[in-house]
Image (cartoon, rainbow, N blue to C red; front, side, top):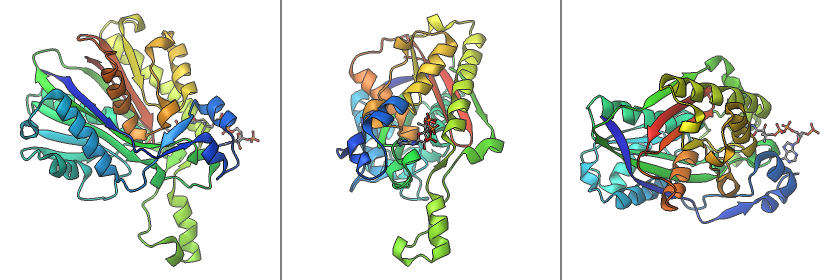
Length: 325
Ligand code: UT7
């Protein structure tokens, strides 16, 4: 058995911050951000929560597929920035969409989260355990960044995406995943204090600042450019396929230069690497399902097309899947 995508959905908060808005807050410029990252604007939550965005994206995917929410067996939610530690976001979404029968849990692996959740869904389906699985990626990165740190705050955005998978007869997907905890310090965010900023002592303020995203950008860049092509080649090699056999390479949207460098290393046509980070920035675990939904709604997929999904990020973690539309 294999899970086939039968519906996609996404949600981006309506409030937009473009690069010029950021140049008013930190010492940066539209030119620097565009050149180094490809990002032009990002959507940022105001009243919305991560679960709310996840629920909206899920409803759109369910509606598109014409599925009764009570058919859903499992909800997997990839997030590192939910407004609650528990209940988990999957249970919050279950409540919103009325998926009464579904089991649900969250997967926290930062920017790799969606691919790991997708792979987990495919594993349950191919084992015959579940037939209908909702996979979500939703993040409020604006709550995680230090808005005084120009090296990180310009990169991220908020949003959610979802896909609904249904079991069909067929060969299971090829998938792979890795972690390298020894390199975890390259990208960290600690749990937050529950007090307001004004109530914190000096020491707490210091560590509160450290609780925001801290990143060695160049280390993460180099890691991504090396590991993404490696894992993609591993999957293709297992199927005796070349890059020319793949219709779309849907990579985590962190930086345009990372996507371009991965395409170059793979000697693959960059036209097969769609990007939307100009509009959303890096939405971490939400970036791949948002892109899938945009492409689907533009009619860019055809039944049977071969698609590679690849995520990478904090942990350090990286994962990929060779799947068919
Ligand atoms: O989702 C997975 C997690 N994250 C990533 O994948 C991010 C991976 N890393 C990257 O995308 C890039 O490393 C960044 C976009 C974060 C940074 O680009 P870079 O080309 O590696 O720049 P850099 O860190 O080497 O900085 C170059 C210069 C520095 O100034 P000096 O030392 O050359 O004078 C920085 O201080 O750019 C400066 N700089 C900025 N200037 C204007 C850093 N941030 C900014 C900024 N605006 N926002």
